Length: 212
Length: 308
Image (tube, rainbow over the protein chains, first blue to last red):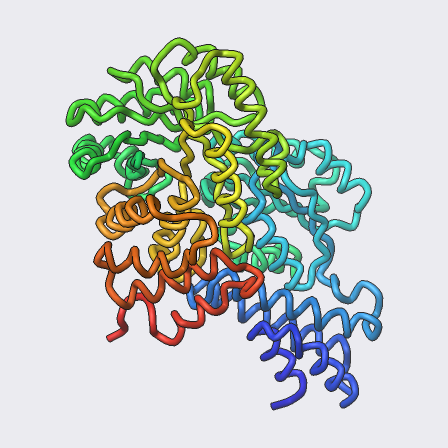
């Protein structure tokens, strides 16, 4: 097994305590830092996401894998070109106004970050203006990802997407939506660019929308 | 134990389908099965878009009342829609729910003040679900101040301290149980309730986690639950927990009591092992933050459906 495969395995198995050491060994053996990140860690998280989507693993196992990746990235960071850890681009994330749910949204953020994005998480109950303000402060943002967990906050999701669709930066961003009551049909109806049913699919969708 | 039958909820795909198809027989059959199984209330939650919610609730409530006399639990995230659905009910039931979020309590309490309606109150506010026991108790005291203002007796309130997911919030059970104990100590006549299945989200063999949560929560003072009354394993666990609670004092070995309860409830050895691990996982998050021991014994094939 190559050192990079060892890193991938440690991340997949959630071995937070040893992953840092293996990353260091890989660096010492002359592996390229970006390669360790992409082929070791991000690839491993893609496998974890796939397994989660297929019901082969559970949320806690996904969490320990993400935690292991974080530990690995800490060791790797000084060796990476600045910005390499979020090389796929910036993504603004939040649960829409009136909705206080965050578990699903946090899982989505974690998986998207593990897929190589820089995630700006605005939290829950985020008013429309805050999304717009955040884009203006981060005009290099590629995607805005919105969550709504209640049938009663679906209209709020609709309003948020509408405001983004009417903004002057609409052609610069992609909009993705999700949450328990949301369907592909609803996403199409309100004018979002994409919908995903779970955290792992959200990471794949983000990559697709960002053209990675 | 007050059992609020949970099986008529539009967030269950089969129920959503029945609502979409206007399948009256499906709704009636589910209502009757829950009434026959001894439900104290039958929860009716449409989980459709807000503008068609009241008419959908009326359709469902009418059907439930055709087949049983069990009081209705009117359930909507919109307090206004809850209030709008009260006149459809032949007798007072339970309103699910208010909290300190927005103007919910001000919409509901004046309407139910001088009635026999009971009310579920969640311990959250405009900032979401408070993380600490102290903050949840602050919300509780806010709710009780409002109840006093409107002359609503504590015995009409079902306080839901809120159950978070164990797999993402390791302290989920401990926070719930600490709130339940404090609430019952302050107001012995009040009910403590929960829609508990959230605890086991994304864990294997969820029923074992749910059953252990139920058992331990009853020891902590929970006396009402939103649950499936036709689930024989769960109802047997409830009965055992209520019997064992009588002799329970703080500091007793709760995991040992779960084992004893399983025996009394006629739970299989395999499921009893799973409930023991689940109880340890709920009671001791520091030992196993990510539920890996519980998931581990599942992976070893020691719990869960027997693989052929």
